[in-house]
Amino acid sequence: MQQSSSILVTGSAGFIGSHVYSHLCDYYADQYNIIGIDRHSYCSSHKTPHPRGSSIRNDICDFEQVENIFRENNVQIILHFAAQTHVDNSFGNSIHFSRDNVIGTHTLLEAARQFNCKLFIHMSTDEVYGSQSGGASTETSYLEPTNPYAATKAGAEMLVKSYCTSFGLKAIIVRANNVYGPGQFPEKLIPKMILRLLNGKKCQIHGDGKQLRSWLYIQDLVAAFDALVRSYLFSNEHIPKYGEVYNIGTTQECDVKTVCQKIVTALYPKDDKERIEYTEDRCFNDKRYLIDSTKIRILTGWSPWTNFDDGLKDTIQWYMRIEPADYWNLNEVAKACYST
Image 1 (cartoon, rainbow, N blue to C red):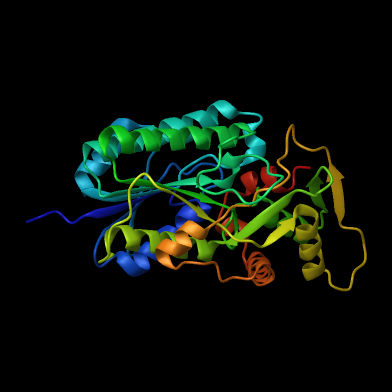
Image 2: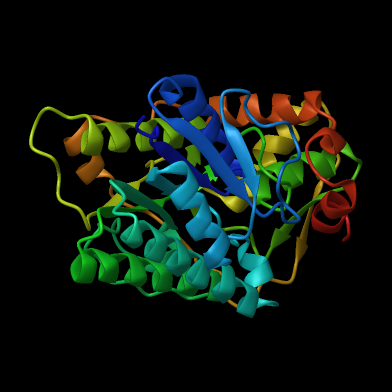
């Protein structure tokens, strides 16, 4: 009897990975075994995984274990989200970022090569383009990462491209905007500020708060990944080339200070008390990220549909309903969110 094929989602207990993993379990579990792999680091959720999938606790840098997972489960599709992602942390322990983001990606690529996988989608970031002062970056723009996190993601991309060229690996790369939404660990701006305010603390802004970011709601990103999987695996038309890069983004720009003001207004609509304070900026803080998503729109018809104010409202309401202890280690939440 032929072994069923599997889709492997790395970082399946993380923010983006968990949402994509749940979506795959809802819509693809009749065709594939859906397997999540996660090391369960400080920012991973400990919520029970989706009942239609399976979950493995493992470090993607452990090649022997990764190889066994590929062999025993006939892994054919890999959606790679596992990574160190918090820019602030990369200024203090960047060696860990190199290990997880570069070595971890290399380990998965080698396993995918050995087992002749059908599709490898690598999750990158718009930060590989560096700080912008002109128009939106396209997939052919120069990579000029300015912080250790972005540099490790750019390095991982180079490995993906090399495996496409040297070994014919069927891989593509995705670069996304700032993703937000329910379930994000509160070290990132939006959930951190929501929980700080809910716990009687002020929003804390690095520098002057004028850094522009484009905000992509999590379900819009999930839909983009679904569209790419379908285009590469199930399209009756000409299959797009492997080795391609796709920007996934939105034109909804909003600076950090305005985002914080929106959160304050949503939580304290009739209170004029000052609830924002400013702290020393990080060593270097990119002023703007803006990417052009025309390429994926032409290929798949995808476009983001969530208005930022609506997505922010839904996100705030989610954090107001939940108990952080039901999702994350409270000591880690306190360290990331309330320590200063």
